[in-house]
Image (tube, rainbow over all chains, first blue to last red):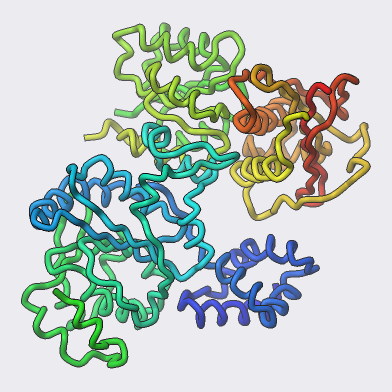
Length: 296
Length: 129
Length: 152
């Protein structure tokens, strides 16, 4: 594709999703836009990029195609093991009065993370407990995939234990569909992590894995600041394994305690810092009353 | 100690694909074109930690191979993973009931094999802790 | 009415097989070659049959160039290495095995899948079989056709 086309599409994606496509990623952009370009009857990627610039439907389609992440069930395993072995027992003890857990999959992509957690809860949640799993993403196409809860054979092979496949899925044509009892645990909502968050409440566990790496540093820091009030004071935030070592400015660093659970490092809201973080932040428009008020 | 894998598939091309993935995980490999050939290799002394098993093969199919391995107490620690195009839910249930530990449906990507082996605690590079 | 797999399902299955084993730098593009995309001299074909709850035959026909390229890709061989017919037959056979097995899972079961039969040349079908589904595509400009036949 022409450098000018790449620049156009990269700046569109950056503007709409804050995700950065560096110049050497041209092949990736081409590979992802190629099927759309053919579908739209364009003779070249450059022609398709022109169409994207004037057609909102194609614009949304191309953004969706460029924000897809490779993902698997129980990705990296260790976080899920840490969840069932350590975090869940702690939360069950702490929430014994309410008997309700809330979990946020904060860049849910096609939903494997949210449904993986749902499967574990189906196996480990004691009777009488309820759970609410919120799955959010910047891509509306991804959100409809989560709602449809259908996965291709190739996707099913990625980390899904065979025993869970036969227990939690039914064949639906060439795809596999999540059983209704699990689907009912997961609700979806459109949310751009790079923008101020809507009122979504607080969560016992927030999964923000393998998504910060797609943002530039100021945006990453902004997200980690804004997500803080949405993690319950005794809750957990899980980042991707390569994301726990990101350099943070001192004030942001002080907002989070790090706790090693097995092979996983969890972030937890720092108790000492809790009183100091509500004071002015670098982005005053983000620290809205509703968000600070959402803290327990 | 290096772990050993037996790749059982009647297609050389498929064995080649699986071999590249498995040797990348530092497994030592042996190959068989059908279940009987694999049993013969095992009788002759190749002691696999893992078998990757196709279902539809000449002479002895993968399902029969699993039932044969499960009859032998000395092979009880061998991890059995089906890698097959058989993709009906009933077939997966049948293979698991016969003693398969995991099941990969063809087509698959290399990541799928690696992730399944992680689930089984067999990520190559020696005996797991 | 004959029960037949939907063309879109056949397409989805072929696409998955292709992208899993043959890389996705070069996409498989649907083509609509009504008369058949290639001559008999320049083709390879492979077929598997399904018997049981549903009966039919799944056939893949592809150009010789494509058969050789995909064999090299599957076997991780480069252009300089010579290929023999047995290797090509093996790779093309495995391709139809994967497509056929997945098509079997869409149809009423239980059914059994035969081992693949491979030939240099186009596929021939007996007159009591009728084509019920077909997917034509091109990969790197080379043609491939997947068709499903069942007894009429």
